[in-house]
Length: 186
Image (cartoon, rainbow, N blue to C red; front, side, top):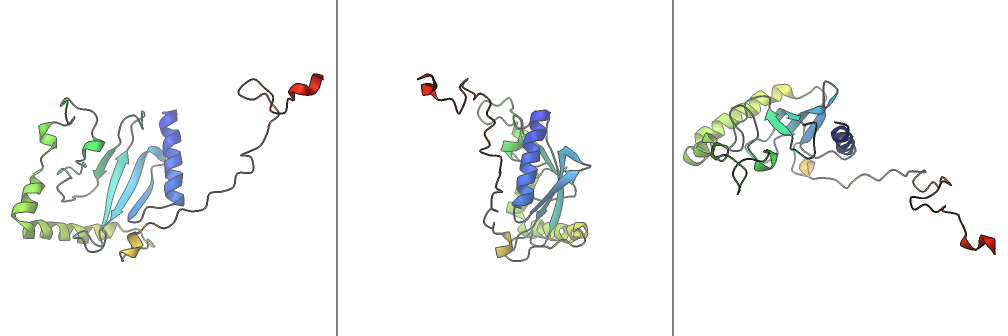
């Protein structure tokens, strides 16, 4: 777990310094392996204005195995199972299918049929979920509203580390003192 925790602390720190537009993250119960996540519906989509909460759970052997991602409330989308789990192959652990690694039931979702055959019903379900999701918007949270709000900004400046080039005077990794002069005996 030490390796997973170290990687996740770094990633969380990076997300805090350089937030991803339309995405909010925080630790769940101060557990580095459990993240509270919010996805904000972007403009000009059917999900516009929604605040969709989810939980991301990381295994102790992360990054060697993928996290799980589950929406906390109903989320109607072709890539989301009815129980809220995300249906994206990159988040699936290796499976038995030598070509895709997925089971057949993981490659199809009834939402896909609804989207294609009855778009009005699909849209009505999503619009209701968007409205229901707004109750989860935290007090004081600034909801992005324009396309520009969803555009990433420039990365923040890297902090100067005064100790980056600090010479300890100890032997180097190669068994040679950094300051040793070969001609000292002459």
